[in-house]
Image 1 (tube, rainbow, N blue to C red):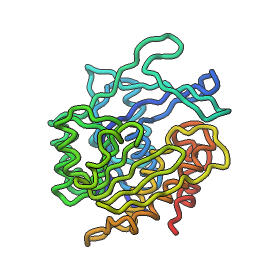
Image 2 (tube, rainbow, N blue to C red):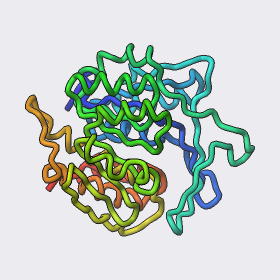
Image 3 (spheres, rainbow, N blue to C red):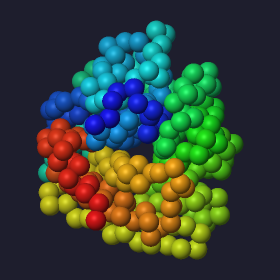
Length: 307
């Protein structure tokens, strides 16, 4: 059992919000969410030493998000709260009969605009350097000056940099980020037109997702296809990609030693498949981390049992 305050295994920064879930038209729950938030808090619940590096508002939502990380076992020393901003909120509308969902940055009841996500800045990245420079895996899903500074610090310290962008944003910052990325995970639908054909020469490993069809693993000229693991029941597909990342990062941590970790496709495939199993199980429950809420972290750990 790890002790809180241990040297972090995973440090991450990026899209972290309060998810407000409406299932079949009715308010269902609200919980910490966003791709970065889901990945980091799930790993913390799996008893990994996790340190989020985030900039939130010093408001009710911000304090709630900090507390959810704390309750999961994460080190919250590098979550910076600002009195002059609101913490981000995202509404999710879910149809549990189909598993389809859509998102809104407006309150579904009042149509008021929610505060938006804001990234860490360079000063905050520097304040978290002691954690960033000692972690085994650094996770990011957005780019900003502060985030890319942190990615470069982690890379220079020998960490695996796991980058999961949903768009390019600033092209110059994106190029810097890709240059220090160890594992690049992206959607073929969203970023295939930008990254396909280029990722093989600039990134150690690429994971290209194709929704319900599965995903590709690429390393130079080598390509492996992983068919999706079929879900027994689908109530909500939200968070499926995050669960794949959780499974792979957890697998990487289970094999991290003082020696260089083997990042070959043959080595990584078991971690990817374990993440796909977790994603399939998660689809049975509403919410991006429904499996953790409904079945608990011990059950999620059993699902991830590596073959």
